[in-house]
Length: 163
Image (cartoon, rainbow, N blue to C red; front, side, top):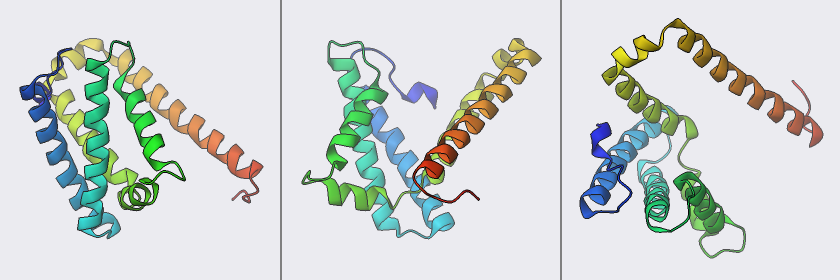
């Protein structure tokens, strides 16, 4: 499935269609998981995933077409922030529908995709050895604990009682 995405620098109709197909499959699986796990209405979740997918497509297109050396994640973040800013005509619509999609539903599908990608390159992963596994575990644990500490500090500073 990794061959689905056209990684070239040029935007082609074939590449865009592959991105759209991948995002449609990703969205459908996410919406089903969102409905089963969190009982959000499927129609609302589908609209939310459509918004997120459209933002993603625009961000990927901008990365490849604009003359700046900027990652698509930055474009995607800026677009998302701009259309959700209070006072923007799109704000209420975007915030309502995107809030109907739980982050864990998206992450679950994404991690499954990454797992499939890892399975395809298992020999390369084994060649890295046990040190890579240790480093991976340390990086993931450090990221988790670091984010938890920052979140805790922010919550305490904003007056939310510590549990």
